[in-house]
Image (cartoon, rainbow, N blue to C red; front, side, top):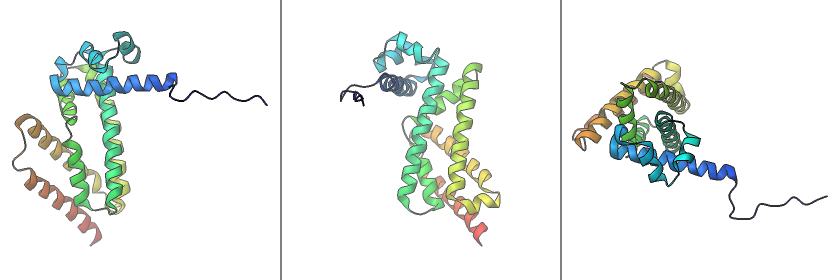
Length: 206
């Protein structure tokens, strides 16, 4: 039987090179949006930050709206995986711990890009259409994780409303943090969200 030639060590496949280029573009996009806002984060700036030619950028993403939507999905996927890993390390399904972990995702520097793009989408129909699709998929992932971690609360029918209230509250807190600086009442408001989550679970189990 003829031996199959092995790929030389250290030599990346074309698929690996494409994936690396795409990741560099997406990370650079998030950096540029955080630093310069959506209006200032031009495709030229992104390609220069990523060290990628304009032609290569256009090969992956035909326009800026598609680029930032993909960057947002890239960020959401990373946050979801980080949350899953951190929650697994806890070893216990504590509502208070789940709230604190969720807030840690909102505090990450790149989350400012989420808020920036949400505001930009208000007056940009194409961007809004793309971001709605990305955000809806992300929210479905978040809700499925919560249902897995807190099945009793999910069965009660109260989990979805509770989680949405917490997400909405944290979005507002994150906006204040990024625009005005560290939120002075952060700990008190987080304590309120923890109590809300704990009481919802206690009400189900009592």
